[in-house]
Image 1 (spheres, rainbow, N blue to C red):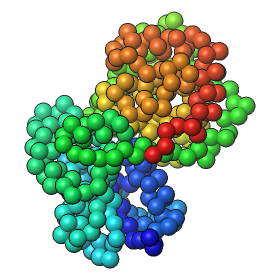
Image 2 (cartoon, rainbow, N blue to C red; image 1 turned 180 degrees about the vertical axis):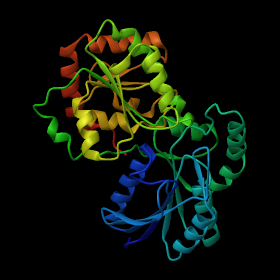
Image 3 (cartoon, rainbow, N blue to C red; image 1 turned 90 degrees about the vertical axis):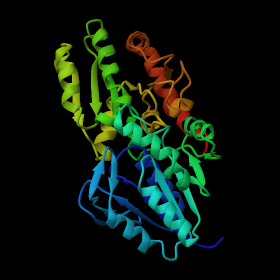
Length: 357
């Protein structure tokens, strides 16, 4: 097959966002070697065109954002203009609109479309918005996915899609060894529990409050340990207040959002354990990143990235999401520096042998 023109459509794109945007970037990079790849997305910042590793990225400022869904008539017009002469469209979807527009126009123009599905449902416990999400999934989303090649980013997402009558294939995220990971050799880690994730009201499912409560119960027993939180969102002040009310004070450090890869690498390299206690997580890229930096992990049983974890070797998969269970597993790791060191080595050595896509 000759060199193809591929248009990648995504609600947002790296360096904005989180796991989806990183996955989209890695996929675009993998395709760009033998194909001409361009990206079209929306942005919370200023619109325009930039270049990431030779990939041209077109960013459109949305006219409206509902929940976490950007909406833009200009984006529709931009998709319509950019698909001229395209051989394949790849649309990433955790939320409505962007993939819907791409799918409709692809079908109209007779262009093959591949849809990468990143979630296990749009309902987030938000009442009226959940009702709209259910209506969308039963109507417009079915048209969007009809006739498309569907890729699930994890077995968890695959199971969700199969349960709804679709026939996807699985392509797990692949993270190459981070640029700064080699710096970990010879470094001593600090007594730090690390959480990395968005802190918005539509991301309560990441359960940072559960981790803060568990850390509070262990704080007197392990006074040298700290909790570091990387991420931003409209619940940041609520979590800060929660930490203060539990008497944790400076024991919990909120870094906010970090876009600089070198700064984020420095945090991973200092951390002792990463915890991802989400109620659901289509994958959980932070788990793969942590392991690449030699950070043992404690992972929710509902995270797709649990496939990367061998309990007792490079981390633990929680039995369930409760404060007592999380306390027991975190205590085990805090109280066993030798185990932590061994897990750190195994995490790093086992990273390259993780499941292929």
